[in-house]
Image 1 (cartoon, helix red, strand yellow):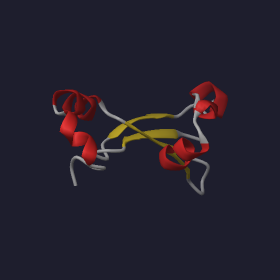
Image 2 (cartoon, helix red, strand yellow):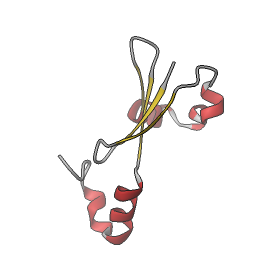
Image 3 (cartoon, helix red, strand yellow):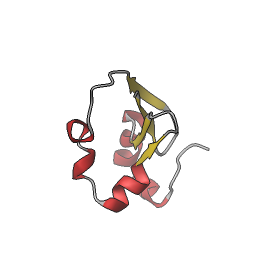
Length: 76
């Protein structure tokens, strides 16, 4: 089951882990609250895991422009 990482603000694909031996505990998913899991983690019908994180570009944009925190998406 591949694990796909996407930026939750600009939707850029950040990377994929193709290893099938990862468990949620190894990825740190078990440390998320139920709300965080609901917002950040989805499971594909084929067993893939999709995780929404923040890419380096969006992180830098937030650091340099704190007022951007009011928006859910930076690029549509």
